[in-house]
Length: 392
Image 1: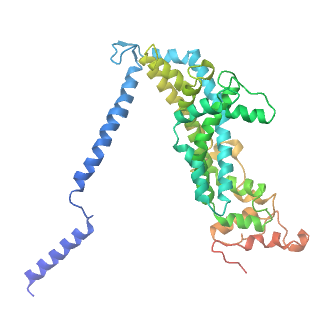
Image 2: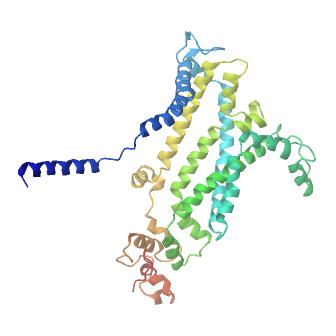
Image 3: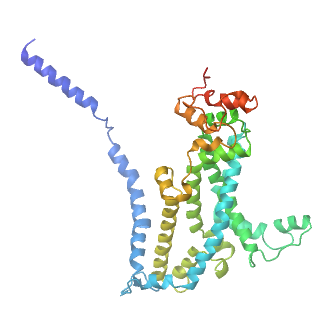
């Protein structure tokens, strides 16, 4: 073979190698991408981005009954809102609502997740049953609550239940305090508890089983309160933080149930209902409405950042412990100090794949006879390994 032929063969091989390393391009995919992406991009631009930008611009103008204002007022609309007693009272209403709905939803969702996670069969059925209300509209649920459950009639569902246990029916569920809070909190709890139950259920199923096995060997009762408090709750910390943040944002955005159940009642009017009546009510004051929306958004952002700074998402736990004095605790290995010797040391060693820690625990006796002849306390740190094998 001549030198020229060998050179051409080498160049052809290099070209084939470069072609094979490039990603394969399917003909016509570029056109298909733009056909699918363009309607979404146009809709996002017209119905989301432009209204947000224009609303921000309107907040600096006097805009009553028009979206094309000419009188510039600067920060006057924001100043009016920060001194508006009605707006501040709506924030008070939101605070009362959040104080009740956030912890109740978290506790109920976690309770249901633990129950469903402990059921050996038909988990998919129970997940679907609790999640189905999430697909319902808040408007539809509010109408059902108003006309069916809490209609104030003696024949209403809730009043019938009260009469069956010897209590007097209540006629003013939606017009007197604290009855309206029962209606508002119950409808939102029914609507959103299934979604957060799924989040907690995913967190529970991600907990390594070695943690529970090591804690059970060290004397904790499987399924008991101490097991839940020492193992389950710390492992759900990241999920709980995310759920708390989502619940706070959802409480800020509460509108449908308040508007459809209590209307524009100043006693039960959250910020969004108040802003809706300012911007789209009889006054059509788009300037103050846009400024109030920006103020409420700023409050939501500050609340989210503050919660993330205090609780965090476990991204920099050591730095957070140094920053917050009440979080300066010992490592997770101290979890077993009150429940049995060496639970935390066993869990840490097992998850690290190193078996037992190099030295005896400070809380555990060095031999079984020192603990009343109980062998589990001394043998716990060297029983369970991540691969399931026993250490001899």
